[in-house]
Image 1: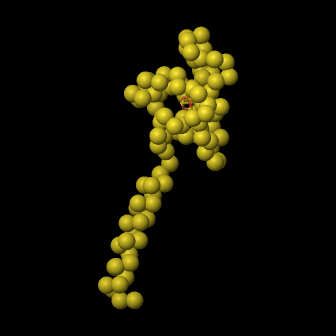
Image 2 (image 1 turned 90 degrees about the vertical axis):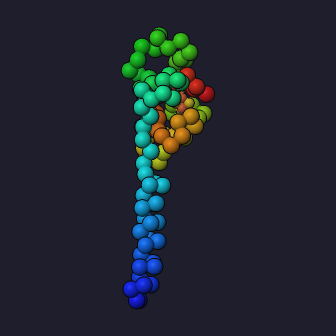
Image 3 (image 1 turned 180 degrees about the vertical axis):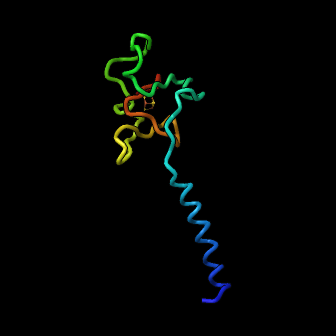
Length: 99
Ligand code: SF4
């Protein structure tokens, strides 16, 4: 293979490799202090708060049984949520948009 052909193949391959890494980067966990999390009153661990202080909370509610939650293979403690696009929530989390 001549040099010109090699470069012609190598550059697109390198670009695809870099693009692939960013496209498949692991999503980050929702920060409880982010604006959206505060807006929906997201709590990362429902067992760590005084449940009486959450007026809309009903016993047994948590992210992993919410209709907006999608589990992630190999990560039993967190999943995706329809509200927090591109991020993950804790399975034992909760927010006011629980469904
Ligand atoms: S909408 Fe459901 S899965 Fe998403 S943060 Fe709220 S309780 Fe958890």
